[in-house]
Length: 372
Length: 114
Image (cartoon, each protein chain N blue to C red):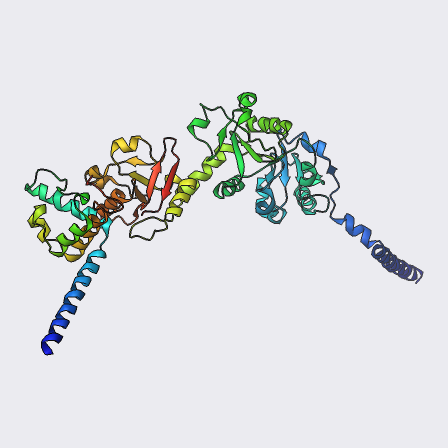
């Protein structure tokens, strides 16, 4: 009986303790809520700077937890990868296999929870060396000498839109740039930066974007630092560089190009043609049907020469894997070529001609005017 | 009175037919016409009547008014290759006319047969 009473006292005491502890928790709730999402291991910019370098140390990953398109693509800490917090579960496979690897998460600054949330999830997965750079991307950019990296999606968007920027290829000219480069890029090899720096714009506020041979290439980062030292205030590095750009172009090429037709039967829309030439010229099979001597004075870079008089003999060899566009100086011979194909190879449906006055200069630049 | 009405009607019909034929000629496709024009002589060359595939008369060898007269009268003997010309339909003739007329000597873009 005594023990039963004793047990009842213990139960009552426990209930009271639970109620009291519940009340006290409720009383301190606002403070606890603030700390709720804050990760326990916070690092500063100096810590991040040790690792945001080329080549990156093994077993380290800097992770941008912000939305990719809206934030990461436009600018991120160099060498950071994008794993948006909203995509954490889907993209967790990108994290290093070694659970002891150093993971540094960041997002949009002290008020941003995303990096803290992702860090907690990573820790829950078993990662033992997880940090949060709480000052985030704004904190990174506030330090003099730091610059942002941009993604290939951003680069393509800017180039397609004809953005007011200077793209600089920091790789050696003959060995790399001359063999292929990002459209509109100028060549200032890092090794010749001092001698060629006068090619940079006079306006120091102009956006400069440096690139070289990919994530393991230092040249663009070195040149970006030199440009900032010269006083350029708006400098970015496209760290994925030419390999990523080339891959993007190849992917775009593999996708079938949609040709917008012009007002005349069989003609290609002039503006659409210019756009394809700027973005993905290889997606068209361009045939310059002028005479060989005219072709030699200059033609579009990706054009092949089949003079209209020789076209009939070669008409069976025309490709079917991409749209064919005939070009000439006025639209007369290109139009004739179009109708020749209609007559002799009617099964070819993806054939067009440029109904425009075209002037091509030696350097491959060109002007197109609507025909009289 | 009846005679006058008939003459008037006839004149109107003639005018309308002239305008109609001119409009039909105008409606041709000059790009297609260039190809068809050259095809005439190419076929003629294959048959052995002429020595060259190149058309003997370039657009800039006549004025626009002269080309109009040639096609209104269907006076194609001067080209030779009658066998090929006789096979051409109205649309093809309109196309050829558009090509020759638009590149005539007095046009904004006179052209030779290249």
